Amino acid sequence: MHRTATTTATARTASPRRLLALGAVALAATAWLGLANTQSASAHDELIASSPEPGQVLDASPAEVKLTFSDDIIPVGTAIEVVDHHGEAIESGEAAVAGPDVTATLPADLSGEYQVRWRAVSSDGHVIDGTIDFGVGAGATGIWTEEAPHDDAAASDDGHDDAAAAEHDEASAGPDGWAIAGIAGGILGVAALAAAIVVFARARRRGPEA
Image 1 (tube, rainbow, N blue to C red):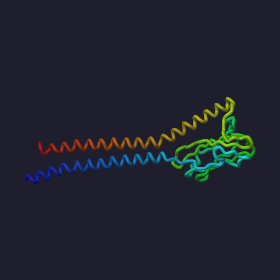
Image 2: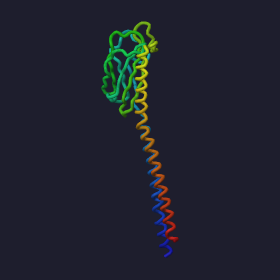
Image 3: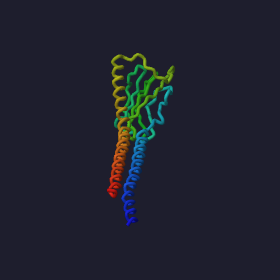
Image 4: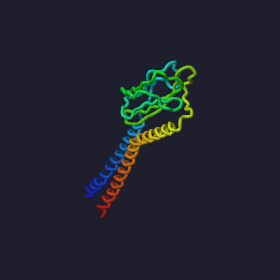
């Protein structure tokens, strides 16, 4: 009889312990998945090549701007703008996307310093952007510097930059925020489960004594 009681007590206490072990495994798995999602969200596509190259000085106007990224680019939301030394946009073709390549045609009469302002939607849905300076013709340095733009143009450029920055921040914060929320939610859920199991185990131990 004593041996049977001992065996029964062991059986009663072993189940909560197994549940605690499963809870610990679930916590570790949740943390690992959240970390993996965060790392994946931060691994956006990158610009790996461009023509013209940054700081390049050309003898004649290039026929186009070509950007090559590390993965295929999403066409919607992708754009290329080329501005002169006044910060005013020159006429250029719409950005054309073909896999990882983004191109835009340029006029044939360029001369001086220019800056390519690009925005692309990477394969994971995040917006990435950047600039590339280049020069054309004798006396060009390949370093773009804005020179006293008109007030109206400056105001328009500021508004465009602010909107692009807000869109970029919002897009970048979205999935990363969900990943962090997932980690926090998983930890809280497993912690609550562990607390409930502890309470249950204590209640089971007190049962035979009562």
